Length: 68
Length: 495
Image (tube, rainbow over the protein chains, first blue to last red):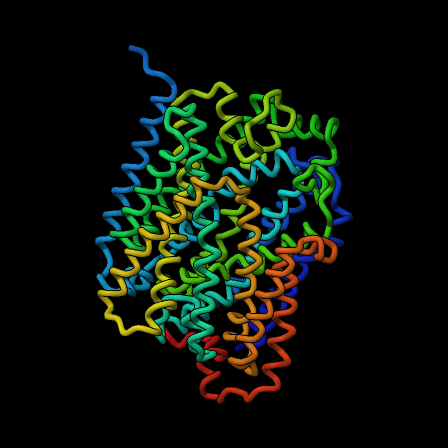
């Protein structure tokens, strides 16, 4: 396994840990608000959706690096 | 003679069922008559099929009815469903191809076969099979109840609950019996496409027609019932849900997500590593489709009428927003698709596991006999779940969360088999038993749970605390044996 791939795997694991913290207690508390509405959604709703979108981006980047 | 609304709806539903059956039966003719053909589709599923199998299987009647039901009655508590999906699937970018590679090399079709090959023990394999099947039954019941609720509500009871469930599941059982997993795959592509279009269409339309858009809808809810819009939302009794319960619901669902044996088994159906990886990469796009469904649930909060139960908020809103009958019919098909595309994989998974892990290791069987036995059990499990769904109207969301607690206990054995060299059979088996016992104790005595933490997470803590020290104390497995499972990270095969 190349050094670049090993680094990607480390970052991937770190991202999963960060994700788990960001959407559960206590990591979610600073973002647990209704206002401002974003795309019409309450802020905390948007926050959780944002992590899904980040997930898509992280997975696409990981896939590009791993396929090289 | 004028055509009534319910007759149009029934016509659309029947057209949908006929089309699904046709696709399922045609698909079954494409694979070999072996057990690998029936259970793992000759390992030939490509990206399109895998994408919709995972998506269609994950988004069940729970997403279509339970999700909006929770948004309506418990507000932000429902965000736990949005939060765990990607979290649960992402590790599979690495775990899935690894399991698939070992499966291809050693000819596995079930999860327990893989675990019992690393940790040779027929008791372990049998125990895993029993846990899987027992957890599947309430999950299948939930799907049947969903189909029944949708059909009976939308036809204004012209087709009663039992007939709706029977109709939908006769079709499912028919194509699973004759087509196996191949039928499950190809019907899921069709069902997934219907589901997604229906969800987005209604999710945008209903808030718009009732409130003038999504933002005005949430502004009004924020003014009247702000407690519904911040996490952790409400508990079932209308009081505030606890942080412990919310957070552990996210974690226990994420952990158990792809450990569900019917999903795990699908890694054995993929053609190659690339397919498996791309399926994971695309999964978040499927997760986003929960958003419109939740919007419909929130739209119900300030709506004048009340549905019979929170779980029927979705069909209730649809019946009360003056939609043309043909649209209602298509929604009905979409909701049935959600129910059936999960129910088929569950029925097929339950029967395959019971035969491959519960019977085949103990009795000498031929390939032909096993295939026949699987079919017989599809029919028996289907009949049992149907009977239970009719006689008891238990809160099925509760049943599903309970099932998750037991499925979570399979996670330490699976991860240990693939990643921990020092794990031993004794450690894994003892950990599993201890974890199950813990889950059961806290399930039966919910008032004992610290901070309201989900019993599955408590079970996993005990499971791992037994697995690790006991493995360290027992004799390590040979290097060559372990290498087959732990070191198969890089693929030497063409991809």
